Length: 240
Image 1: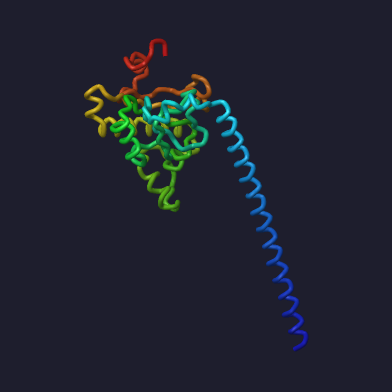
Image 2 (image 1 turned 90 degrees about the horizontal axis):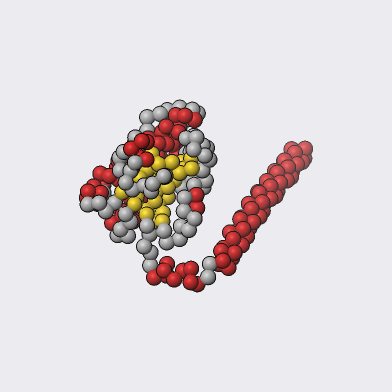
């Protein structure tokens, strides 16, 4: 009996040590995460402080009065896609709507607000190279969390091989064209009245289109996808 009690005691000590070790490991992991967050916050607040120093009160005079954006832009939420890539001064310029897959369906209310209440004359959908949402929609995502699944369900593309870069690139463009098509149906009155142009583009940081890394490549203007005709579009400046 004494031997059994000693074994039980030893096992209890081992269990306590293991629990303590796990707790210490967890504490260490939490500590590392907190350090990461502190570093990120330090960077964000520091950058904001620099931004405030270089943007004086007069820079905000028009914005304080209200917004009058020039365009409603629907881009992917991907961190590699940021507005300075196609607008050096986006403040007050762009009414941005961001979601996975740069979709009309999952940002419809925001897009409608930009077009019909802020009266932006341009609605642009911006897809991008190596889009994770497109890759996910090309595969089996049935086991993914329901909110994400709902957003992927509205991406309608034909390709199934997410490991094929060319197929992914093609589907990025297909998705952009689908968004333009849906927007043209929704905003047909504005387009017919000449109050709105709908443009589809791909932010090509991979240089898939061989026009240079980071190029904003126009692939659709009001439903026109022929590149020769796009270049002749009346909404484009000469030589672009």
